[in-house]
Image (cartoon, rainbow, N blue to C red; front, side, top):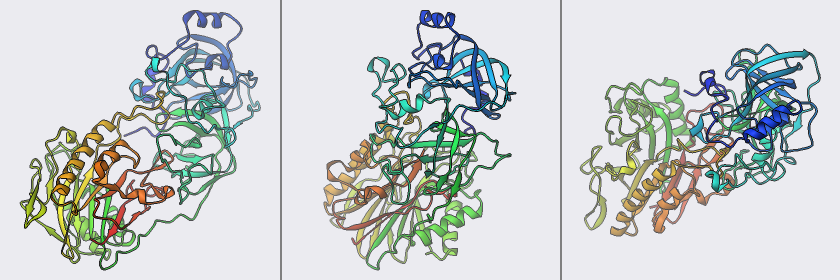
Length: 613
């Protein structure tokens, strides 16, 4: 479980010396010269790059005014020099890591002696930028009750439109050694304010309050605006420079964090030190927090399918198992009936086995599915039947012991399932001919399960359905996660997206299988759907669509409506439905019921496609 705070005390020992190797520091001669010259000021410590020229050096009597005190997590305080230099690239603030509850107060004028270090939230291999700080401090309070340095405004006029400089090839793509250009690049602008007292005015919420007491706003209200108030991540080059994470300095027991949804506004002034953490990068840790003014956002309801339309949907139900409270089953069921209009076929992802995360060899999900389908019936929905293939124990990734898998639910009053030699976890379904038409050798069956692309990942589930006499092939997927990818604020620019390699192989495997079906019947109705864990503009999606075998149906929506997930204030596509060429006319809906809201039944929004086979 992640820490509730940006840096946990458990990893405090990594400070100061964590970057002795691997990051660019100033030369020893330069550092010694700096130490032996005039008294060291904060801007001398920060320097003009991301790495302090005094990294690893002792400093004495560094003066500043305390602008924020953190008594939990990474305990310490921020100080700022009220007498700024004339170089915009050098920050005037710095974090003092106390490793204990600080004894200073906001407004104290202090002198700090200690060791300059570069702390990397998440560790050396995370790709995260580092935080310049002073550790092992000796602190002298000179006076109290001083006025704070005036907060620097962060707004649409101050944050540049270009996100980051290209990394230095000679440094492995890192931007750590590059001189900051805060007037040109957003990341450089934020870095030039690291540790300083900053403020924002009234701003739109673009990432709902999460369980860790943080939310996201944008200081650029016009930037790639989603139809419902968020900020759309539409390409690798549109990172959305106005996004900023908001936390608070006050402990939650003292001051509850406000609950906000996407489209709400954080009104008034929010002011405090600018930090950098593992879970989102640059973060305004509010000493003074604005007030949330609620918007009017409500969960969407899709249009019911017409009599002659087949409605096929996909929904990641986030590790559903019988040990979950009945309330979760009921809420998900209500969403299926009321928000998704009881689709004819529903592909579920993250259905866990009958005892969830208990790691005892159980792989059956019969109890999970019985409980869920009963809840749907109780909510006024159809008496869904289900088909699935149980995975091998511990072979499909996900939560240890959970054995997540994809499952088909279908309404037998509207559609029939063609059961043909049901496959098992290790048996591949193939494409055969039955009565002169393309068919699956195993239905339900798994696509290419022995392919190394699916190692420790969910294997695709394929099934044949018949609607009004027409066969429809449905392939349900849950591709490998983005775990291990570097964040957008990485010191590598562009960030390293190591997880893409596996999804690319998975997409190629599914694309190849679809091409086998189309080789037997070019007019076959094929739907590939699920949690693809990648964007509509990604190489993964391109590989799925290769050769015109499939079309990413979410691309039929206006760009402002293309998203199924909100991550760090970016509304983005992870869940998709792709169509074969025979499905020429359809309606598509990304049904926004979770991702934009603080209260979620899942972190994904379901997708629905309606067409006439």
